[in-house]
Length: 285
Image 1 (cartoon, rainbow, N blue to C red):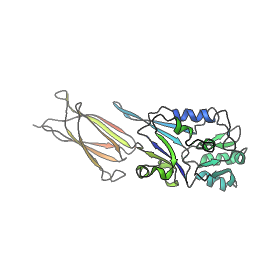
Image 2: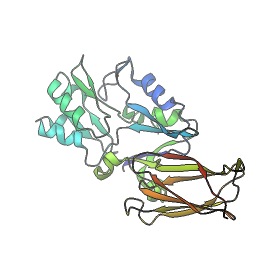
Image 3: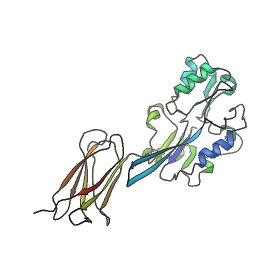
Image 4: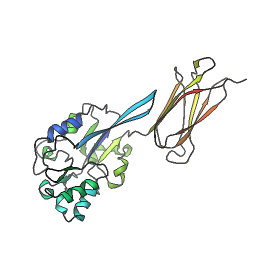
């Protein structure tokens, strides 16, 4: 049976416990034949990718735990085979992909090829040992009574789950992979991967007041990833609106309020999340 990770980003608050316990487990101690010791610096077999999104006053931070995806079509396995060292990287019966530290040791050329093969930058080079290293899924623990790796065990909010892939059931229908490995059969799935948001405030500058209860529509205009997307909401008691988890695309924001002329602005969300700021509506007549 194949093991898999399911990471729910709506539960992750960026505490960095997963990153810390990975260091605690692997730095300064080798777990042969599974892995050599992780260096104290320069490697994060479990890491948090932190991204600041939007602009003042609409700013949020997204946290994405990143580990080796243990891909079904692992590029590192293919790279080892192409380098004439197929025994250096292997897949266990439970699906975890491991770099054999003995077979891969003292081979700088192989190590660099393995590092370069990973789309997630999840393989690291140990210069001292001339060895490529990465997450093992804490296989040494799983083979000695543990049911989950350290990162999942340390997650206070159960954002990281680890079990048989089939046990996740319908949850995987809603899950996504990181785009860099989506076509490689990754065994690390994510719920609530951040997409885009657009936010702003409807304002009557003449009266120096926000406009409460204005209707705001967001309509995709480019036919890109968000083609056909349309959503509507009303401004809140502060005149604010926010559309979240929007597919990247170019949109039109349309604001309508009783007694005011409609206002349209373009929101390009293809590359960034966007604060459109204070949008002034003009009174009719």
